[in-house]
Length: 148
Image (cartoon, rainbow, N blue to C red):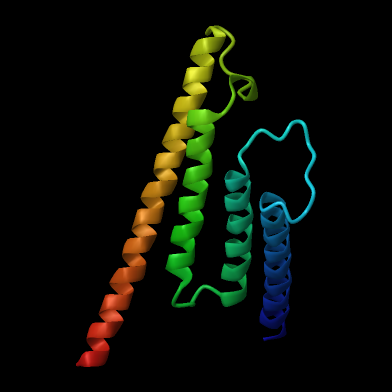
């Protein structure tokens, strides 16, 4: 029992840490905290979504796995991840993509990287759709059972 309690305390501490990091990043995105970085190329709304992802992950840790809103928070988290990865794939600067296959021209490697980011975005958005489905399926099931 003590081990479970200690584990829960650790998860709660991590949850608050994630929420704090997320709120700090959102404050940067909203201009509430100064941000003068010449290498900062993403729009502020993308940065804000990144902060919201951290905050939602922390909230999910605090609420626990059995929370009735767990699937809904997961759906929003995955939607945010899909939006960020999709933005990188569509609008990221060519200079931001590095690596690739050495026997392919750079333009092909950049197109390949954009395609992989696009597939990652689609996977995140499909998982988000499934999480939304689970959330509202469970809600409808509970509503129907309470009416009976």
